Image 1 (cartoon, rainbow, N blue to C red):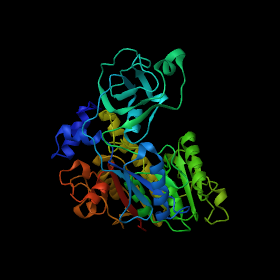
Image 2 (cartoon, rainbow, N blue to C red; image 1 turned 90 degrees about the horizontal axis):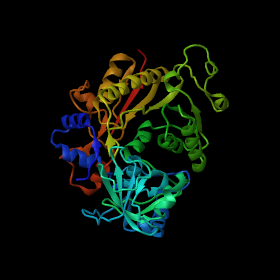
Image 3 (cartoon, one colour; image 1 turned 120 degrees about the vertical axis):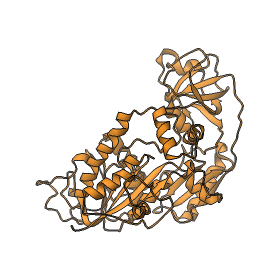
Image 4 (tube, rainbow, N blue to C red; image 1 turned 30 degrees about the horizontal axis):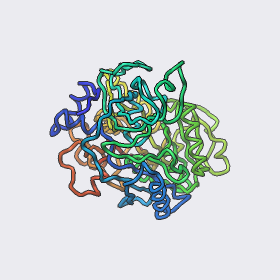
Length: 452
């Protein structure tokens, strides 16, 4: 098995959560991407059947995307799977190597080509047009421009065609952009969507798409996405609302907010307002510019943070988390102190969300981690802390119930969803259901605010 850099502490935690898997089996799951790519269709622009035709033509015209099939989701009319039945157990290894950083390596495993900024080193005699084997430096030990054979721990990504000579990439501190290696062969083939029409399609993990459907937005709703980057849930809810109502998207980063705004323009969304703001300070109990507003279409352009209590019909809270559910992961060295910091910050955001939610409103809490202290234990804490909160049974069930013994009753566990079936030995044999199960680790809870 290829070498990853996953801390022993994290392996211990995952082994306790999934005792039927040994450490090598857990590493094997966490280091591989899901076998299928999920695309959300912008149904404001195209029907699902029209989207299938467009996507099949795109794959047919992409020489590196041959051999993939497109299928609908059994429940959602805005979801398409792109899958390959070809999984290669063994690939040729070439003498010439390219070493990339772990972020680049993970992106390539999900279907990207190797872009020049992610390249750390290459064989001294590499020329444009050479076949090369690509590896990720999992310990951050490879110096940029290293000329010798890299002997540190590395993870085999796949094989591709060099688009530059080595000297072009590194001499005189070159700042090359663009594709450095065009990937041609992977153990788990993934389509390249670098030229995909983003007006019609948005790559998004299935559980994240499910969040938008559980939100169940109505045309006139005022909805808050507290931690909106990269914008998948924001834009999905906007599409489901058919450009009616208003979604407020918040993120601390100006750069991330600019990207969300850009994507909304591309998708033709006009009901999203984006702000760079700290969501831990989003509710203003004192007088603020919005405090006298009763929201309607006439004053929506005046909305800006902070906001008064009991202001939003629906709130999405997908807070910063440890990200332990993300796949593939080639490196994770989070310390106990770092892991303990996430629930603390999540609680701060939860407090803001409860204050901002209208009575009768809906709060959807989600994470892309597997750890109970950020999932089941957070919901247990919220229900005990905020007596006005009630846990709702979700309308659409795809995942499995929450874990017992982490603060939730068996009945409450049945009301949340956890996506971690790929770590279990009881994975169903049905091929279609395995498409749903082979996804990133994820958690979803849906709550409402009652008068107390």
